[in-house]
Image 1 (tube, rainbow, N blue to C red):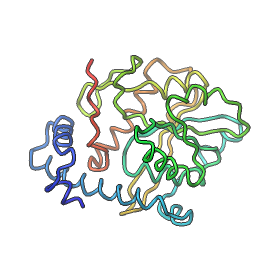
Image 2: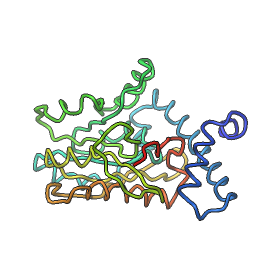
Image 3: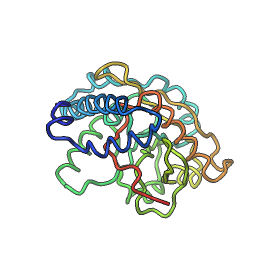
Image 4: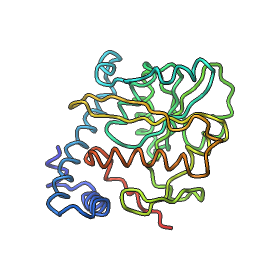
Length: 258
């Protein structure tokens, strides 16, 4: 499958190569092409794994996706505090969606952008919410955060999308490029006084992943403007520099210019 996507019917290959060259200006063209091939092999694994998630059992998902340190969340749950977990499209985020709710004390909620195709939107929601995760569209997010709830919630933010239209962005350097980062994570954390943790997905072996949670911010209102956004951006960048092939390079991340 990767051979087809890379050689025969190149899927966004120009975008991938441009992104890699701009992100790693010190790498040779040979190194860039090698990374590109590794990325397509990983991407096709993700596609097959994501299709399997439509029929996977709870036992299988728990064997393939493990939260390494859920105990870090327990004090917040015991205190009745909601938290935000933030990450990027790194390794298999779809497996995280299917496997996280069973392994953490909080009720889990994923924010997502609704797909334009109703069929695929329904299928995606069905796959992600099969084992307890609640899906909320970004348009519904303001109403969602105002809801009354009895059980503390952990809301999942994917913070590496290009904020094409939003005026509320933080400008920083990310992967050696001037980059606009959406302020949603930081804005909601401060408004509702929610601690922010980072979710680092690691590929343990082919088809097997783990999540390690680390605290970014305990008291969001004690931080400066842009500080939380910088913290989670640097965490993601650190992961990408360590293993570049596991990030979603087909995404047009740098559409937004200052």
